[in-house]
Image: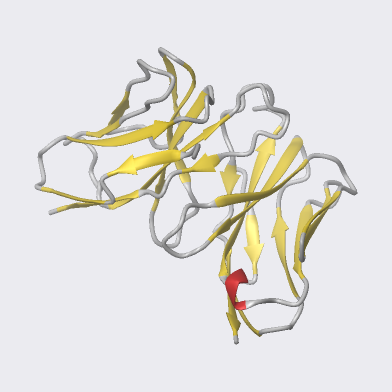
Length: 116
Length: 114
């Protein structure tokens, strides 16, 4: 059974702090890794989809890196703001499902709280 | 505005009754999905559909049924055979042909069965 692990489970930081968290996954049969942000009382929202080893994506103060050989991705938030408070989910797509666009394996998420 | 709508937001049913959760999208997406979220667990796939009139079981399809008669709509029926139906249900869609495969989510329906 494939497993996607996220750490830490939760994180409390002060406004202005930079932070990062990890998504770990089996490196075999890698196809793509998704990052989503899920704010309380809202829908999950896609942040990045990463497909290549060494990929680095950026959206404003949020960036992500990918290492498919060792099976991990880091999500970084620079200068955290209270509006960054959310659960950050990663999800793995394996090559056995590629082309079918049907199945992501989800982590449990990292819950981030940014105190003003 | 394009997006996914789910209704209702909260749903209460008596045990033994079937209940249908609505999911509609106006994003022109081919693929649609139903997930279930339970405390302490990641999102689990119930059913997915890649195209109209076609759908496939996900990891936890037992006790659920779906239909995909229109591109925009993918309703989920929770039947009385589902042993633990109380959960938060999320519907999502994506462009099947897109290289990015990102999924767009609705706001969810919280179902409570007593």
